[in-house]
Length: 151
Image (cartoon, rainbow, N blue to C red; front, side, top):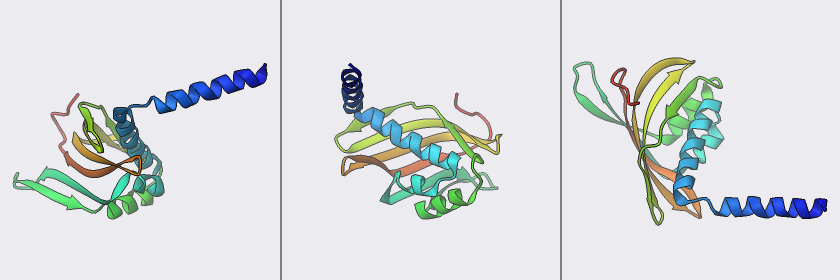
């Protein structure tokens, strides 16, 4: 009897895993990235990105001029791996998430906390690709500000 219950549980779990949609998988990759940031886990963080991934930020300089800054993923991963666990806490809400074949997009308003203290907010725009049956982040661009935060 125990074997039948165990077999039923395994089959149910397997069916649940295979029922995950592409949208669910895109969200899981993005959530894994933010978990890795919070855990300061550089290996887990790097696994979320494509080898050729690009990261950009839209911000204002001291004169108020809009700028786009490009950062390397490897530098970001190294920085996250050098901080203490729990320092970087980015809290997101999934807005739009769409997929078409091996392309996925996500729009995620966020609030970022450093050591539990609000730092800034904005919106992330993700482009993901499915490579070898695995969703990875190819491109992120975000906005950053201290006020007028998205809900």
